[in-house]
Image (cartoon, rainbow, N blue to C red; front, side):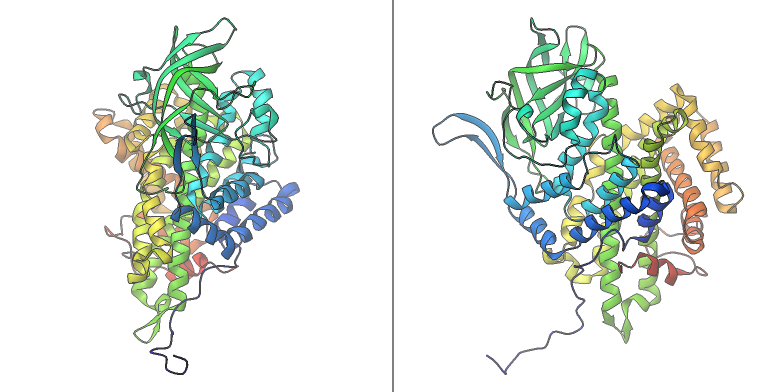
Length: 545
């Protein structure tokens, strides 16, 4: 009743809303400025700030909640019994995907600073809801695979780079833009795609086939087209499978069920059956892995970017809460132990951002040496950054206490999402073995990585010592497969250390090198050594724009 309240609400932080997610991320802003040509920097900053303000708005945050509270639903048949194989999404999910497309998150390959601006945007956009990032990632990443067939690329690339999202299922040639999905894994093989059994039977028309088989994981099943792998007469081959054929009829694309996933709830992942499904060959027969590997590399970078975005949002929420919450006579952010925890989390987030944006800049450069750098650095970064995401999200939730375990805080969604990128596009062992493969077959890749690391030589004795330890690890090839994770972890850490020593504020680089490279760190967050400027590290991570 009015006038008889049972309590007054005090000591609660305001919602973290109505802010520019990009401008408030100083590490990300610095990276964009570092890797963007001055001639387009103002344009890029304005574009990213527009996306940042949208991402930080209460409206889009509410759309993200709605999309997750109403997950996609499979409809195999219409009311009359006709097979339709459609996925129904909440309107909020379509609004979010449309916003991501209109922000240029599928159009990196032909714009100035295209990969850096798109990577920064993807990192920002992940913080709204990662569930619509899968089709954005697949659409962006399909381009290098399609370029194996210039005719296909000329037809499809403009559709993929479009800033118009059209959700209707109709021939792609009649739409202003298109989105792509991917289907590689099968029940019996998983990451071992050479064990795939889906069969591709050639048709009379050159380059066309009928597929029979299945895909155990098909990403973004409502897409306009998909890149899939199947066994053609000359071996494993890459194919483009349109959802709707040119004459308006639906291709045979049977959705068996949607996966009931731990996180990523707003996005659909499906099991798909092919039975006389029309497909167009991409690249040569028997060259399926080589053709699609460009797509895989791009999606692996997106996994690193996505995890960096999740970490950033988790840290932003923890620092924001601690800046406004009082306990034991003062603000949490000023308490030495909480400051240690927040600074430790902030170091992990900034290191992830620095490495992921450096990889995006290598894509923009496009030179031979940068391509060699990417060959080794992408799987190493994908391995390490995605592995660090889950512990960061869990610790950040703990910073909010019991509130961090409640759905309304948004932290549980981050926690559920946090393991995903370490699993998708090749789990940890796959990435570690890929690093070994690159070391054995492409010596230029190691040279390029060591050159990058060497740019910080002499700047920090702990980094120099860690590089020597890495050399020792590389020199001992006996039983290297069993030590592959250790090797990849060290490679990723010295890459991050080299970047922070050269580009981050001294207090950030000092704390990172002392803890991650110097060994003065415990097994949990909040165990940074004494003598570091932790207040400055935390203040840099605070989401104030």
